[in-house]
Amino acid sequence: MNAPSNEIRVRIDQIERLLMFDYEPGTGEALFDICDSDGHIVKTGEVNGPVTRVRITDLDGDEYYLMVLDGEVSTVKPFQLRKVG
Image (cartoon, rainbow, N blue to C red):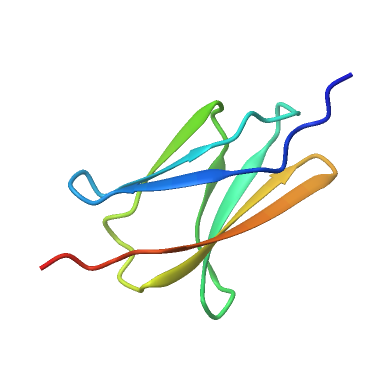
């Protein structure tokens, strides 16, 4: 039995304003939360592995955390939005 990997790779597409992360869920109910630097949840949704895409046009901060909840496994990955222009 394969345990889900808790390694998440995050990419930001500045042109399309998308956050993309690689994660293969170990359960069918895997969810993600994007939290701001104060810990408030600003986005939530289902993980659609192997690559989940999230529109981030409404995020105006700089530092965020991606949390993936997958059964008994939870993983947190910090990321930054760099303003362009």
